[in-house]
Length: 388
Image (tube, one colour):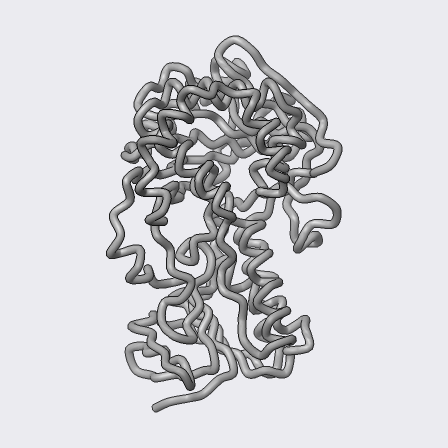
């Protein structure tokens, strides 16, 4: 049994559903599209956050937006208004539910709940194999299988951003709903970098995450205990003073992989497997949206999709140098983060992390942090830089 489509989207996560939604709201809305995933039921198990200038993508589906940011260290705290950017949050459950509802109503879209067994391609078409069905398409856009290029490449810095988050409801007002805490660093953690991230929704409701940058994950109890201690020390909250509404756990790669833009001919990698997770921060949302827009523009203009956009050489270098420092010298990395946030405005930091700077702006931002660790990293990563 076989069926041909114009496009197949393999993986109904953020990247796959973002592409499907944009396709049906574009001049390509009459194309026949298959969206497949092993599970197509919305799961409220992720929170996607991003900063954006102007009108944000999926504005009507946003969970919350903020215009002030706090960053805290052991002995000092800085809170700044955001003038150029706003910080936004989107819940995976609400996003998936809304997009899947639209896709189910669209006459040229099919949804199939099934696991992908394999994918391949040639000059004429791409092929996707499930347990019992073979599908072909002009192009497949996939985010569900790890590309061979990643499997065959051993990173020099196998860091992971791992975290546990709890959404809590308190009995009394404790949070400023207009101010996120981007990073409240935990100086007591020494086997990497750790911090608490707070997304307040109301004065009595917030999502708090205990996040670690390291090469080894912890037990779930470890993160929970850290959050309980933080809530007691920071907000004078005991477990009896709040209700845990739900939890999230995640692991995001922060690694120096050699990413391939295609899984096979005519099979385009997307999302994290397409190399769109920024190695030094773990942020992915905005980079996915940029890739989706480029795919549709190229399909309309040239009939073939855009491949995942790689960061420029200098930003790949910056990321690699910071990974080296975090992996080998986490205490030094913590001082670099402190200098970065204390000596620049939050808008400047977001502009830099979003890779929007000119070279002169980069040099101005980086001149405000210690030089020596980066000179050491430049020398010790020189071979790996050209590998990736």
